[in-house]
Image: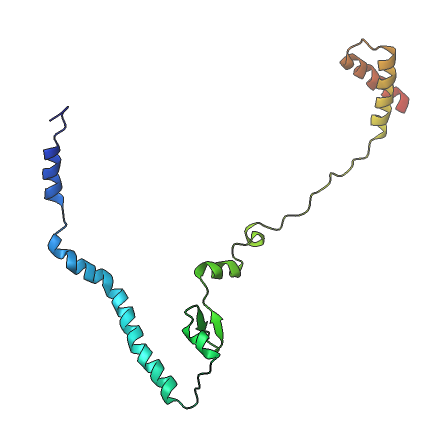
Length: 158
């Protein structure tokens, strides 16, 4: 026992709560393999039926062009009887367009331009008065010049 840690104590607890029984192992494996075996059994039953249909039906003739299609695992026959390529789940999702950029993002309008505002006659006159005062008094604070430009503008517009 080093620093209060006793590995034997953990082994006892582990053995008490273990629900694994090695005798159940073959049974668990059998249960896991059962669905796969059922699918194989279904295939084994369907294969002779399909072969019997092709061989016994005089209306069905297998040509040389059909052999590569019949033997290719990637080719399936669709509901209309036409040969088609087997499509993966990912291909189905891609072709559906569900996750295309147009469906994910909304239709965004084009870039809007700001509407130009009309400059008022007061604002034009105020600019002229302020410019004159700045030329006459370049060292005066702008706040004082604006006050004087405001009063001059009101006089000019009367």
